[in-house]
Length: 430
Image (cartoon, rainbow, N blue to C red; front, side, top):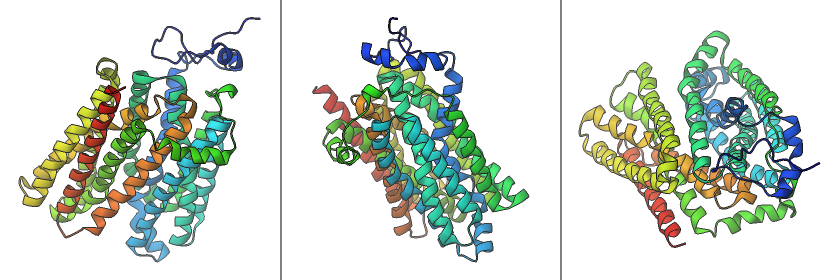
């Protein structure tokens, strides 16, 4: 019986990776056990979006309940805020583990294990009697959650390449952007009705639903494409990947931008509510405007990336972010334009996420199909690690004005632009 091409890969799509004959033979089980990717498109999109959204829902859901948590656990606000820092640390480091594991054992098993850890961590948070316990369970929760995020990107790279991969990632990011938009609203309602612990029980339920959905997807990394070296060697591969200029350029562009984004997240509550006297109930509207901008630019990127190429859009987006950051720094220092002088350049900076993030991730993975899991993990770890730095700088430099936030964003956006231009330079040379 002749080998058949796996149903996950459509021959008429010239942007989709075409497997070798050996890969086609080994993937017969995918054909027999699953419908085509074309007919499963919306199901695949929904499941991958859910996996990528675990970073947002794990934090945004309980933000409105943090004061209640502090009161009931007898802790101060600063201690409760460490639950976010602990999550980011676990989320950054955990990606390196899952990336190496998935290149050796495939995508589905590591994601399933990660979701189980996420569920266990969420149960631990719901049952915790102190903030210290929550911080520890949040680290475990983050290690589990990041498996879905990093490996959903690798699954996209398994199925697509180049501009098509960037298009798919933009679509996923646009869909998952709904999570930070709705998370605080839903979380506040859950906390009001059933208390803050109920939020973590809802996360348990979401983790179980994602686990059930995962088993409807086929494995996208066939056995012959998996890494065969010992797992320790796989971890050493991260050091080797950091010697590639293209990866440094793409990862650096995303990392500097993420650092600016977390400076925005850390700085805007004070800048809007305390400094510019915006009522707290309206802060969500200002924050949500940025999320809407992210959705719009991701949808635009998905339509234009084939025409202009991901490198040009990445460089243009990072350059626009740099200009927005500089205007923000000037306005936040001089107080020019008041609230609008702060809000508008912030909105412009945040919105270009759609041009920077998806293209930087897809570009980093483009030339390394056999190491897509490791590259995705490395890029993700660098990005979220830099987010810790961005938010930390805003807190360290705080002086009672929005200026530290504006300065940090301007510097980080400039770094993103320089890295993006490095990618263009490296690509043009060969």
